[in-house]
Length: 164
Image (cartoon, rainbow, N blue to C red; front, side, top):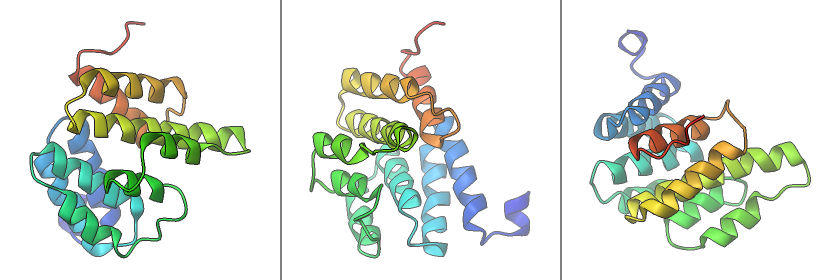
């Protein structure tokens, strides 16, 4: 209802897109995130999620990612993850970039890094690697991050959530 009242609110579209992603409605999530990027083209996280939802809904999302990345500053975190998805860096580079002298900041960045690496593994068809990355996301304990929730939902979809 909030989006009907304010259809040009990027934050509302992004939140609905994440919710749709969590329940596996990737095409609907992609539509919302694509519109959110039109409204807010310099949000690196929205660009990442729009790529993921596009790729997970079966479209070739790399061309969109290249176009969207052209306006981003990829130097600060999480720009390296965009570079990973564009094929410019590898997983080791991402994990190295996640390191930070502040231990809490490092855990937050590792939470994100593991999630996005897990998604890349899923897109590539490597279920076993994806599961390990998603499990590592949860091990960071950064429960208030969307990537944590995303990893948990992916593990449920993969029937790989550890029993507690």
